[in-house]
Length: 174
Image (cartoon, rainbow, N blue to C red; front, top):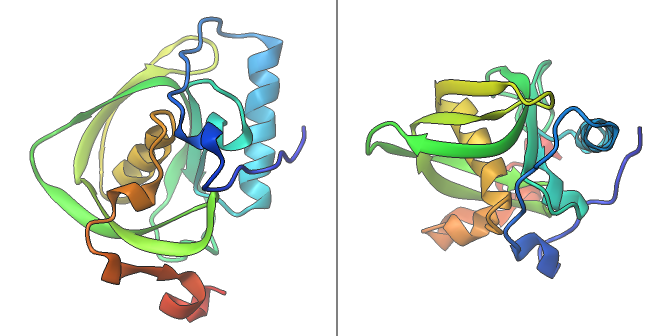
């Protein structure tokens, strides 16, 4: 178990499309997930995608158990390892919400996301995952899966008057 270095916006590796995982239930995959868990926990993250630590694979982890200091008012999201995800919007309704990112430290922006989604994919053993979720849970999944397509949340901000430094926008969080 290792805390890995987080890539930051500007690193070209964050703009690449990640490759699908082809082998499940392997020691290498288990090690990657353990490192991602340690890295996410050390940074108080709500989620992490493998490309954020320089691994070019379609693996995301997310979940918030106890209150997260970066998102103190967020509801609990079950810890999930999601591999080779596919997201399907469930309707046309979007909602805007504040997002931050471990690869874009110190900044927050209001980002539109589908309000309700279905996500499918696999767990580390290759078992199918199929969930329909909404609100914050849906936002976290969409944010993390964007990393697998080389998309960072500032690319989705529509109104840059709603984008800035966390310490200015939310001084209670710093």
